Image (cartoon, rainbow, N blue to C red; front, side, top):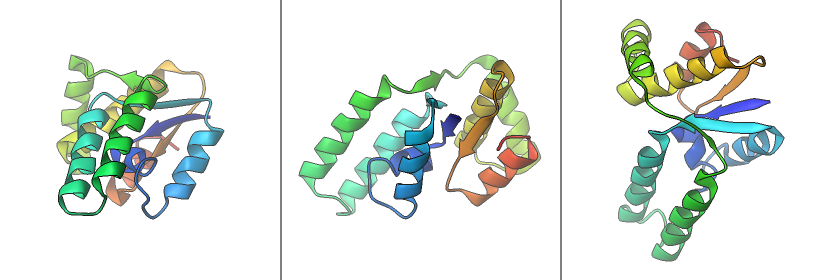
Length: 138
């Protein structure tokens, strides 16, 4: 399975949240785990917010950042190209998505076009999941 992780589910690999176990299971079953380059700053922002809001202690915050940095090289990273940016704009308009959500969907669709096997799209956001499904992703 080719798994595309949108940031909300990428974060679940590092911070215990609802569905963290399910996301970890999907990752363990995946042959390849992909995400957009924008997931890195989004995840770091989520970790920093959790730390500022006292959701995690400093020791865990530092470990989580290191773990993401160590794992980042293992992910298949999709860069933000002009084509993906333009497709993101169309998807934001068509599906009513926020900017980064549209970038994730456009990135996953681009990956899906390039591969012979379907991409499994993983996100905690219901609107984004529904949009991915309507665009032909699993």
